[in-house]
View 1 (cartoon, rainbow, N blue to C red):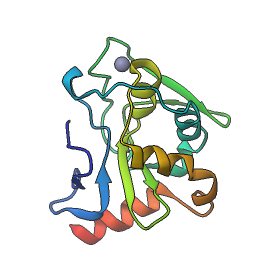
View 2 (spheres, helix red, strand yellow):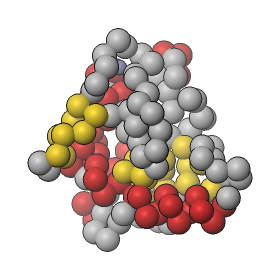
View 3 (tube, rainbow, N blue to C red):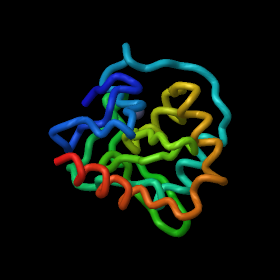
Length: 146
Ligand SMILES: [Zn+2]
C-alpha cells in the first residue's frame, strides 16, 4: 500500500482523518528517499512502540524492498513482528503522523530518510509520549469518520 507523504489518513475509513497524515508508506524502491538521520529515530520508535501502535487489524505485510520476512524488534520485554500495524505519532502541535510500523525497518535496513517534520516529531517523543495511546487515538479518530 502506498500513500503520498502528508496525505490525509484514510486507510480503514471511508473519509479522510484530517488530523492524521500519512508518512512512509513505501511500496517500491522509487518511493524510498535515502539519507542519514539521527539513529535515535528508529530507537525511539522501537522503545515507544507499544504506546504508538494502532490499527493492528491487518494481515502481515512483508517489506516490499527486500526479501526479509518476520522482521522482529524488541520493545521493553516484548518481541514484535513488524508488518501488521501502524504507528500513530503525535507531533506535539496537534497533528498526528501515521506510518506503517515497518518504517523502523525502512530506516535501519534501507537508510530511509523520512520527512523532516516526522523526524522532529519522533525526536520529541520523550516529551509528547506521556499519556499517549496510539491505539485509542486511532480508534477514536477512525470511529468518528466512519
Ligand atoms: Zn526491507
